[in-house]
Image (cartoon, rainbow, N blue to C red; front, side, top):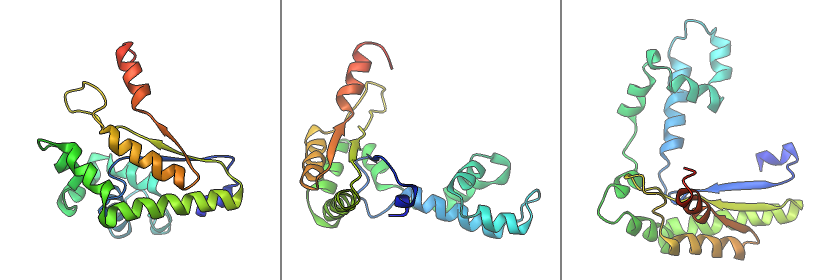
Length: 180
C-alpha cells in the first residue's frame, strides 16, 4: 500500500520459497541493525542524522557490511537460526518448502498475501506479476526447486488475478548454454 504513492505502472513481487515462513531473517536483521543504529554512537554522524538514518534499510544494510562497526557480530549473536537455511542443509530440503506451502498458517499467509496484492492491483488498475525465484543447490548445479511448489504458487497467484513468472526455466536454459 505504501508504494501506491509512487503511482507504479507495474508491480513485480519477487517470491522466494521461504516467503510464507513466520520467521524472517531479513526482517529480524533489519530490526537488529535499526536498534544498533539508534543506540550506538556514530562518530561521523550527528545524533539527528542517526535517528533519521535508522529508518533507512539501505543505510542499515550498508552499515552491516562495514566490518569495523561490529554489525556482523551483532547480527550473528542476536538472530535465531533461519529454519529455511537449516532445512536446505538437510537430506530433503524440498520437503520443508512443500510443508510451508501445503497447509497451516504459512500456506494461509501465502493465500492471504497474494489475494491482498491481487485485490489492490485490481482496484488501482495496476498490472502485477509474481516472479517465482528458484532455490539453488549448494553444489552449483543450478536450480533445485521443487516444481510442484512453484506450480502451487503460480496457481494461487492466478486465483488472485496475478500472473506468475517462474524463473526456473530461464535459469536452466542459461546453465545449459553456459551463460551462468
